[in-house]
Image 1 (cartoon, rainbow, N blue to C red):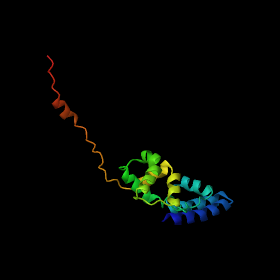
Image 2: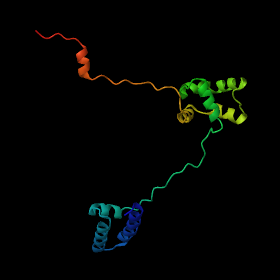
Image 3: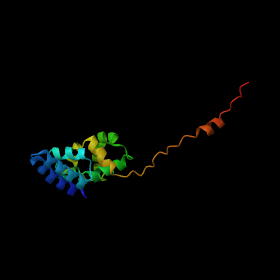
Image 4: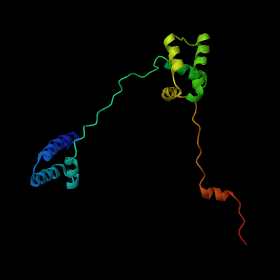
Amino acid sequence: MSMKTRREVLSVLSERYRQAKTRAEKSAILDETVSLLGCHRKRAIRVLGTSPMPAPAQRKRIRPLAYQAALPVIHRVWEALDYPCAERLHPVLWETACLLASHGHLTLDEAVSSELRAISRATLARRLASFRSPKAKPVVFKRKPLAALRAEVPMLPYA
């Protein structure tokens, strides 16, 4: 039985359970719930006795991503400065973009320049996470096993 069907059955049965007057009626509804859903009796009492929970709503992003016009400029400045992290890129982003524009490597219009001035460090970090850095990742060497390390260290036997 799907969760949607379970919720529908529980909503109908909980309404009947709340409207039941006698203990025998409530017991019959509990028996029916246990047989239908295959749950324990205590669970059925808890579920039927409480108010029904609404189905979880799917959240969708309504607003578009900000700073879309500035992304190509951010990427170009990021490449020019040899792929720094957002913490190092943020303070020099605007000045570097102006320098690249003055040398003809970029074109800055008013919308892009206002976005570059307004972007926060955290937002810049999220946007940089979507870019791929061509720099090689540092290789982390595994530790040597302890036995191999002990074999390399000379030790004198106890006398």
